[in-house]
Length: 134
Image (cartoon, rainbow, N blue to C red; front, side, top):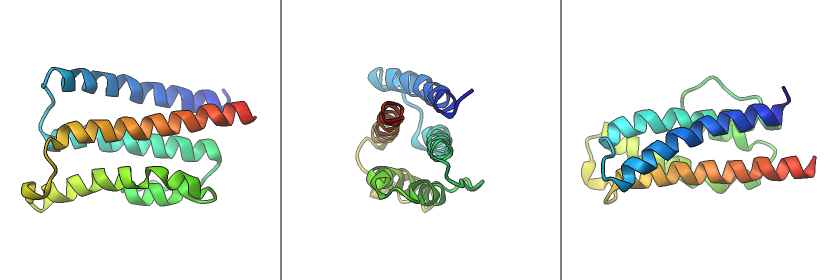
């Protein structure tokens, strides 16, 4: 299977999870932020790793999103477009770890889902563009 199909399948799995969370968001049934981040962080890591591998980057085995992002953008600084989105999710986790719920934005759960969707949409569009350019 070619690398485009592999990435397409990985992104489709992420999309399925996000569609479920977005349905929960519409029904005001999202889990608490800590549980939500436990779901979203691995999805973001999968997307970064998948797209990095698609581009031929040497992706690290780290679970750290910022390390994954750093490896992900090597050779293509335009991919920094999602850096702030990745940092936002890391910030939410740090707030929870430090018991600083007061530093979180209003409706952080909703923002976390939407931020992850933004990362997905950006990477999906880049994948589509790469397929056109090939």
